[in-house]
Amino acid sequence: MELFAYTRATDAEQAINTATSKDVRFIAGGTTLLDLMKLDVERPAQLIDINRIGLDAIEKLPTGTLRIGALVRNSDFAHHPIVQSDYPVLSQALLAGASAQLRNMATTGGNLLQRTRCMYFRNTAMPCNKRTPGTGCSAIEGDNRTLAILGTSKDCIATNPSDMNVALAALEAVITVRSASGSRDIPFGDFHLLPGTTPHLETVLVPGDLVTHVTLPAPRSKSKQVYLKLRDRASYEFALASAAIVAEVSDGKFSFIRVALGGLGTKPWRSHEAEAALLHRPADIAMFHRAADAALRDADPQSENGFKVELAKRCITHALTLATQSA
Amino acid sequence: MNGKDNPRNENSTGRVTRRSFLSQMGAAGATVTAAPLVARAQFATAPEETSSRGTQKIENAVPIALSVNGKSVRIEVDPRTTLLDALRETLSLTGTKKGCDHGQCGACTVHVNGRRINSCLTLAIMHEGDSITTIEGLGEPDDLHPMQASFVEHDGYQCGYCTSGQIMSAVALLKEPCGPADADVKELMSGNICRCGAYPNIVAAIQHVRQRA
Image (cartoon, rainbow over all chains, first blue to last red; front, top):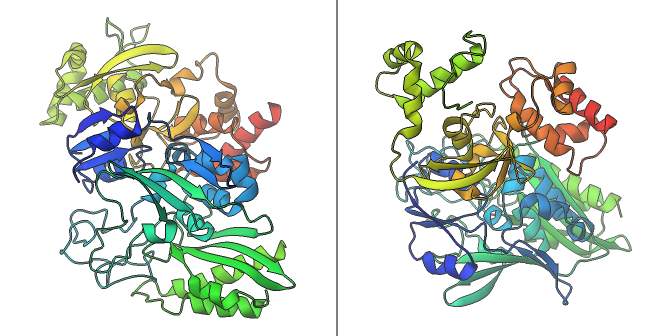
């Protein structure tokens, strides 16, 4: 690990005013950042510790929305009574991620920015366009079994590893970002970027931006919600495929449906295609299959991850079955 | 462990114990890197040199104050020092183990302000003023924490390397939301890997304590 200057911020404003260069990193839980610093993938010149600036509350706002501070730990987020009752897909997704120890450390803001687990990104001896732009992608034609099949480009097929992000995509969360010039709200779907020819750019954030809150829309009290995660072992493993479903069925048909996928996309993957295939249509297995086909129509598998196409379809179909069975 | 008279190569009867010997070896490894085998051999016969470790000047060192196992401590560490390395190398609390050093195995699990975390993925300087509990703070050989006693009773280990992390996780689990079933325990213990595969006995040890609580 390379030497860095360390400062402890006392409030958000101080943190933002200190973070003026791209060599600065905010550190909260540290579960991604320190891991990558030990690998020399991240080499910040300065770390700003934001663990003591507040932003650690979950508040129900008068509008019915739920506002979550960026420094709320994943475990507190998952076990919050309002999250458990009104946004169960999110609680399930958070608890499906990492381990109890890591969830006690990892924060809401940090999880939004979780980096890929692509082994080539994590290995400084290998070319990687995300880590070192222009060096090439080692994963294409390399060891790509766990990597993305949706939203890929010729320059990058790295998977977004977060479970929380998948639920936030399905719930249409809004991310509040503060900078020296003020606060702005970013719809979840606009926050992460596709790799395209610039895989090193993962979000719309720029140096000096600090994620302060995530806000969930007012709960849909009649909705059924499911997070289904498929992986190589039963726990403590990243998704090969996962699905977050928020569904409302009336008279046997979907009156509201949100489908988001994890472990499959280069960013948290909202499947508008699956939603369009389901909305106002019967909640039955034939329709689930059609939605799953629609969701994977543009899948672009690599040499070792072709199995994910079928796995993803079964994941979506089963998650929809669970979400409508419990109705 | 880090006594002024530096008796770490001997117990009260003057016998070199396995634990004190390994502690010496660890200290030697931390002090010299150029010719470790030669230096370690020298160290085995010159233990007094270990005391110089505490006075070595650390470049860019920052002072931090922590509470560790109920005692206030002030240490100086390089900013890059993880909490795990500060506990093991600076405070000589070697009960907490370094396994993967990347948050993937759980051997380094300690409690910070009552919650379990991976001490390898956090910097010591981020914990100014925090209360840390390690396996050394849980119980004593003649006064074991009920979870330690249960691990002994249920044979919840083989090689023992993951055990302190397993026990720290298990003790924290007692205060966390956790269903009654073995499956619930397994899920919440999944961040602690055991290469020996002592899992059934670990689950039995934890369930024994939970059922008696």
